[in-house]
Length: 131
Image (cartoon, rainbow, N blue to C red):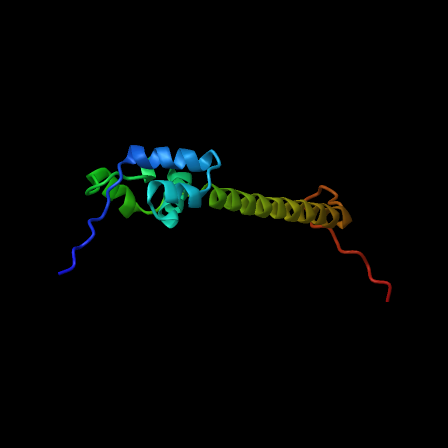
């Protein structure tokens, strides 16, 4: 009979120490060989840390109710996505300002071309045609 390999469990502190070494510039491949952990797993830990800090690196075992609730509410907002959205909204605001300026000037020209009212309560007549 074959023996099942027991899955290793890593604490949050261990994961944070490994991520700190990766962030300091150590090679994931070399670190993987040294620790006996797959390089893809180390990369996953680093990615999770970059997305949400130490809170995203869970320890071994079942998640707490708070962790489960946070996971159910959705992923943490990525800073790059937020900056992209801010840029998009700023561009839209700039276009709206240009349109308001354009239409404001157009309205001033239209109002300036009208004949002034003589103030007696009657409406101003339109200019005569040259026919």
